[in-house]
Amino acid sequence: MKNNPLLLKSMNHISIVCNSVEKSLEFYQKILGFYPVKRPASFTFHGAWLYNYGMGIHLLQSDEPDNIPKKRIINPKDNHLSFQSENMETTEKQLKEMRIEYVKCEVEDEGIFVDQLFFHDPDGLMIEICNCENLPVVPASGGGDSPTTPTNTARFCSIQQAEEQQKLKQIQNATVQRTMQLQQLLINIPCNAYT
Image (tube, rainbow, N blue to C red):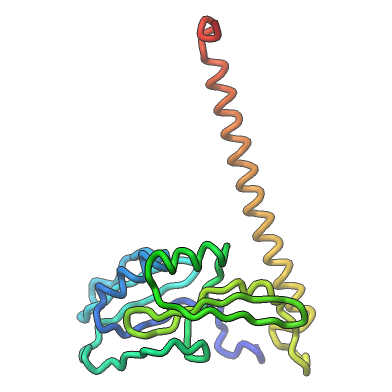
């Protein structure tokens, strides 16, 4: 309770005030792979909800869209949302093909390298795409009951390993099912089909 006084479970969503909900909706769907989800019909203001990667993005139409300050300079030290990439080379190639202006950075820590790509959404909110999982979660000095103590880090890694094992089992089960389906199809092929 001491380290979680509000009994939080996880992050749910981030809300973004938009100049144009429609433009932002298109950006978050086409560029970042979010998909629209149902929004309460009782809302009396314009907006849209999106979901993917275990989190939501709630787009809210600004009452004064002309007053939203436009950011022109891509500053990696600005407030931003960060997403992991499966393949940074492909991600960068896609950004180039989509003609999205970005800044590329590289972080090195004790021989570990992290690649980062920064760009803006339609309203100037910074987006980062990275391979930050290359950096291990290491406890900060002081220890205590922080989420990064050795015990909690080990617990986090165990959870990640369990999730990966579960995904692997699902893939294996799907493969077994497909193999069985193929075998059944082969059994049902008439003998004269082979000649």
